[in-house]
Image (cartoon, rainbow, N blue to C red; front, side, top):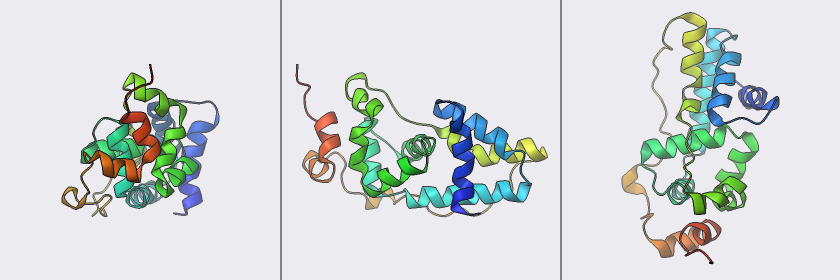
Length: 178
């Protein structure tokens, strides 16, 4: 599957109106379920590639700051939320996770404590396949999509966090200006 074809499913799911990641996932499932089962499997494999490409230490650190912690499943769900916002959002966040400090809802989360996760986005292919065929999607070996926890730098090290993610650190580590 070509990258453009993968993102076209997400684009169609967000084109008609802004939606929550859960709504994006529902629309993408409905769209993808009309495809040939082999295409659905290929879409799922491409999602694994997107997850692997976005599985960087610094993006994980950003998710950790923004969501007040992020274990493996939390980091995956954060990337699901990011994928629901499209190709440009993912590309920008992977290139420089600190750009997330410019996102309005993330800025607000510094005060509200909102959490950004969309696990349902990660299940789009499996749900579409089941809808299309009535069968579970064939199990395949999946690539590693994130660093091993033991290989990560210490996300609780605030000095390192400020060095690597200065804008997000200013939002989430510094006391508010009242």
